[in-house]
Amino acid sequence: MTARPTASTDEFAKIGTKERLSFGAGDLATNIAWGAMSTYIVFFYTDIIGAAAAAIGTIMLVSRILDGVSDVAMGAVVDRTNSTHGRARPWILRLSVPFAIGLILIFTVPDTSPGWTLVYIAVTYNILVLLFTGVVIPYGTLNTRITRDFQERSKLNVTRMFAATAGILLVTVLTIPLVDSLGGEQPGWIVTFVIFALIATALFLVTFKNTKERLIDPPVTVSQPGFVDSVKAAVKNKYWVLLFLIFIVFSAAESMYTGASAYYAENLLGDTSFVALVSFLLYIPALIGMLFMQPVYRRFGKIAPMIVGAVIFVIGSVVMAIDPGNLNLAIAGTLIRGIGRIPIFGAIWGMLPDTIEYGEWKTGKRVEGILYSAGSMGQKAGYGFGAALLGWIMGAAGYDGLQDVQPDSAITAISAVFIHIPAALFVVLIVLFAFYKLERIYPTVEAELQQRHGTSN
Image (cartoon, rainbow, N blue to C red; front, side):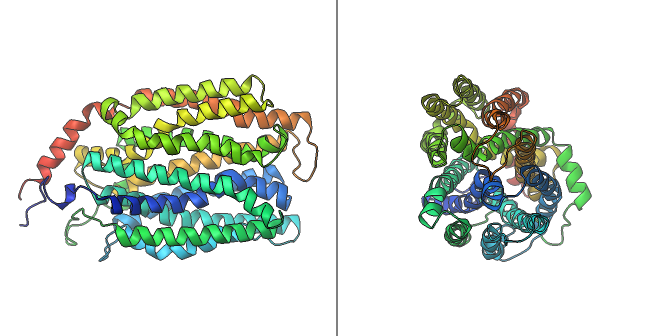
């Protein structure tokens, strides 16, 4: 029988700068779309198209619940893909152009009756979400297939999260100026996102071309676990389940304060253009800070810095809550929040490969596509829940995007969804982090897996 790879073989390769940056390009591409979906889409639908906020919230919640099923299904598809390009990379190539088309479609809402407008929004939004799943699950799985080396995977994760932050920052900072320069109406939004979609496609092609899947899969004669068995293996992985909950809570908080940022800038700070300032203060600290996080993770692990970061985020929220309409406090609080996000944003996706290795160590089964779907599924479920709450709260508070002046109840609601509710969710996040103890046993997990893969059959 063929010998399994040892720790010195290609499976534990050190990754060069070009490949690491090319891998990060994929998250830059996905977060161009994610930035649009999380920061501007609810605002676009309510204030540019004139759709009811509560209806939009319901569409997004139902969409994300259904999308959770597609995440698991796509994970299973990746686990069963056999291609000369590997398991993950083929899907990045195949779906890069459809993904770009989907991004453009969500902004090309036709001028029709309110009912048909909601139908169009529901259909096109779901198409983009499914295409997002089709790309992001293989892309995330690629992280686990480039190398098994723990430190190299950590570097890959920091690179991808740096790129992800850059993608969100690119969209949140440039969208309003670009739209305004193009007339400020719906055609300006469409042209802006045609530009972003073309950039995303080019970045996906860079990822496909310059990365390599090094894991040696079982021969095709060795059967993969069935779909039901794969799901059972995932559910029995306690750290996978806990991380899934962490993703939901973190993403719900992110969804609320990013989705409310345009409303906050317009209605409490007095100018929609301030959304660029809010986004800049929120994401620039992470963009810079992640460059220096790798030594921190090596020294303290991932969990302790993430708990500290969550505490800092809550402190920033308290600063803003003193006077939500005060620009100086908004700047200071948002900057503190941005600093608090650094250790979380830099490490959360890097925890998923660790749970995959833990699952293989515990069960002997490596179902990385299914397991990696936890991140995307939890992220999208959290964002869907956050977006739904945003829409429902705004609708219940009497917000009308076509009115120049909003009632006091709507202003209070905007403050709640931008400041108070995200702060409460970060307190929950601290509790969940405290229960995540995989780091304590991970050296044993890694050593025993290396020993297994270094033994001939």
